[in-house]
Length: 501
Ligand code: BES
Ligand code: MN
Ligand code: ZN
Image (cartoon, rainbow, N blue to C red; front, side, top):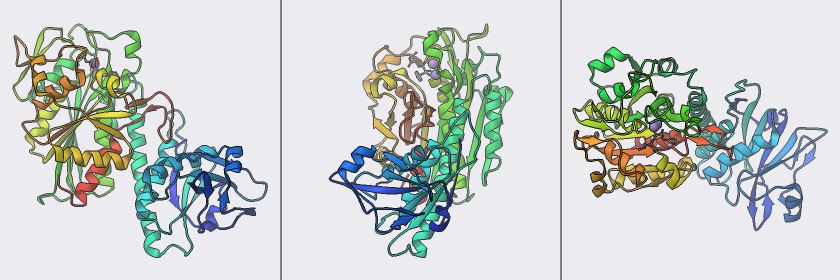
C-alpha cells in the first residue's frame, strides 16, 4: 500500500491510529525526549525504558527496531529505535520504516523532537523517505493511509525549525515517490513494458515536469543516428527498440553544472543466442534498472528545482533470439565509429551503453555517469547490498562516496586496471565485447565503456546485485530497489548547492 506524507500538529497526531515515538539508546536503556508529551491520548509515556522492559517487549537498540502498545483509549503508541544518536539520517530512514512495520495498515503520526537537531530538514526528509519507500508494493497501489510528521519540542520548535521540517517532509515525499515509480517500472513484467511501452511511461511522467524536454527516438531515427550497438542488440526481438533522450535545463544559457546520465534499458535479457540458463533468466526483467534510475533522477532534479543541467539518455531494447539476432562473431559499429566484435551476445549492456555514452560525450557535459545492471561479476564480488563504482578521477569518486554515505546506498570503488585492456583486444575489430571469463568481468566491462567517454570526467555504477532485493530489509522492499537513484540525487543536490562537478 502506497502512502502520502504530511506535516501535522500534535493535536492532529492524536487522531491517527498510531503515534510513533522515537527512542534513543544509551547503555541499553531507552530514552524518550522531553519534547514528547508525558501522556498521549490517556497513555502515560515514561522518559526511560529499562533494559528488562525493552527485552521483554522485543524493542532492540538497532535503528528501526519497533514495537507497538495497543490502547483501549487513545491512539496506539509505537516505540521506534533511533539507535544511539538522534542526528543520524540513515537511522531516521530505518525509523520511518520501523514505525510503519509496528503500526500495520492504519495511519501513523511520527513525533519528531527537534531540540538540538543539527539538520532538521535532512532528518525529516530521511524519516519520510524511509517510511514511504517501505510502503511500496507492486501488487497493491492503493493509497488509503497517511504518514504524518509532527515536530515537537521543549521548548516548542521555532518557526524556522518548523519550516525546515516541513521542507524535509516534502522533499522526502518527492524522493520516495520517484524511487517507487522507478521500482514499479522495474517490477513490471517485460511483457507489460517492452521498450515502446516503457518509453511511453517515461515520456508521460517527464512531460509533466518543468524545464524538462523529452524525445523518444524510433528505429528510423536510431539508424539515422548510427547507434549500431543498440540496433545490433535489438534486432533479435520482435519488439521495436527505442531511445529516450531527456533534458532538464532550469536556466537556459546560464553556465550551471551539467551532468549527463546514461542508463542501461534492456527490458528483458535472455542472453541472445549466447542464451542464459532458465534460472539465470528469471529476474532479467530487472535489466532496465539503469534506465529507470536515470529518468527518476532527472524527474527529481526538476521536482526539487535543482540548479543543475541534466541530460539523461536511455537506450531501451530487448535481448532476444529471433532469426535476425546478432550472432557471435558479428561486428557492430558504434555511434563514435569504433567497432566491437560480439563474441558473447549476453554481454549486450556494454554494446548499447557504448552508443549512449558516445551521445553523452557529444554534449560536452562536466560529468558523465552511467548506471547499469552490467555484470554477474559485480554481484559475485560485492553481493546485493553494495554497488560497484568505477571512476575516472579521485575528486568525482570522493563526491560520489559522500553522496552514497548520505543516501545509505553503499558503493565500493573498484579499479580500472589499465593492463586488462589487453583482455578485449580483437583480431577483427577495435575491441571484443568479452574478456577472459571468469576473470575481472566487472572491470573489463568498465574498461570497454571508458573507451566511449572521450576522456571526460566519468563514473560507471554497476548495480547488477543491488538492483533487486531477495527479501525486504529496513526500508528496502523485496524485488526492485531502483538502487543508486537517491545517491545520484544527493550528488546533484551537492552540485546545486555549489560543490564542484
Ligand atoms: N544483465 C546481465 C548481468 C546481470 C547478471 C545482472 C545477474 C543481474 C544479475 C548482463 O547483460 C550479462 O549477462 N553479463 C554477462 C557478461 C558476460 C557474458 C561477459 C555476465 O556478467 O555474466
Ligand atoms: Mn546479458
Ligand atoms: Zn544484461
